[in-house]
Image 1 (cartoon, rainbow, N blue to C red):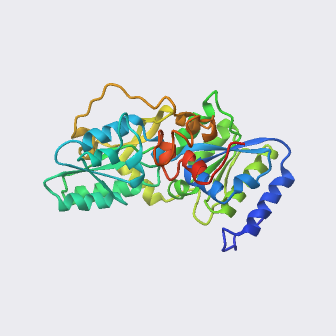
Image 2 (image 1 turned 30 degrees about the vertical axis):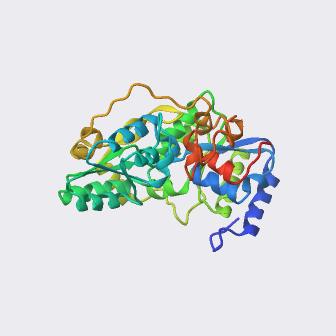
Image 3 (image 1 turned 180 degrees about the vertical axis):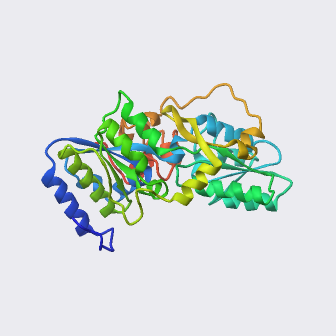
Length: 365
């Protein structure tokens, strides 16, 4: 089905046509994981999860950057924010992510100077305006946020802004897919890849993964037509026993991606091992500053130390992030754990699966 000329990617008619195509070709059960938390919310918001044939099970992946930011990173952020002379800046979603005993919102209420910014350049400008104080930016997110973080560091270097640093916590999608597919818990038959990540990075990195694990990957956008089309193309591959990378988001994504942005990332950052909350250590799944820019690493400026790291015993966020459980499987969901009183990050983030189930009132089947 050719929708290249379609202007309305929220078209109910086009969405229904793709759903009908899926119903016509499907012959057996398939488990499809959408990597991106934004796609999870869109699937539930537009009711696509309820329109799909019962043979399809949607598995919600770990593509929520707030949710997978490790407890260690949150605790480090809290300790840095509490130090004298520090202005700690972060995206708004991180304020309510629980640490051991508090979150950044509580730290701010207790006197820490924690401020919400919409971009790392806001933090750089704040450092220029407050030269007597240290300004730290909590660098979370997948590949989509990294070019702007790299640009902010280069800007600070060029302008000799020495009171700006970042707390590195960025994570990468391809190693997470490797971790999921190589796990004995894995039950994923096909993936919807995150369109915004691929707009930056392209999808050439996914081709060896599809070949190695014999798993189709379809690059998908975020509107109803995008999502229905992505699921259709995934099911078609599965039914035809094909395992390649297909691009269902060609209006925004090319195979090569944004080479300028990739060069910027590679200039400033290098792959490092990283802890993922609820998942554990994934080799080379994060980005750390290269030696030439390590003076902008907050960990080089602020000593931190903590003894124990403890998640709530009621929270099964790790299982949700690994795709082996749904929010409905959590005994605390909707009772002890709500957006107003979250036990885990997936209930906090605007991209978290638990928040999506709560917001769009998906009841236990």
